[in-house]
Length: 114
Image 1 (cartoon, helix red, strand yellow):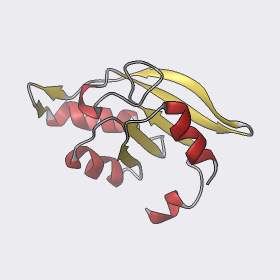
Image 2: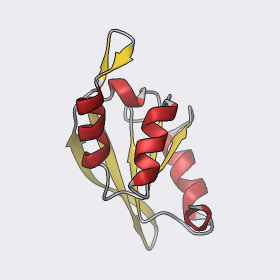
Image 3: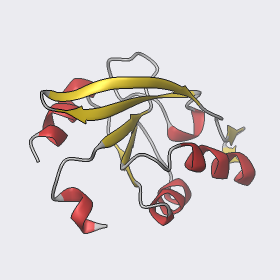
């Protein structure tokens, strides 16, 4: 997993309510902005609807599994908050899950410099 941090991830899923900040909890995200690495940095490839696994302060295990499977083609998931179980399941798929609360463009610019 450490090798994923040595170079820019090819595909990054971002949980965001605003489209400007990484400000949505992984468990409450109803969609993800999928960014792909391009010559000039990252470009928005798609807006992917997904199941929000959080229900009344707990996660439905089946829906959490579906959310993880939905993002298995990404190298990294950035969310305002992400719990240890989601990180663990993403990691099993080879996906790095990170909590961040900064601007999307700032995060992508940082990742592109790797």
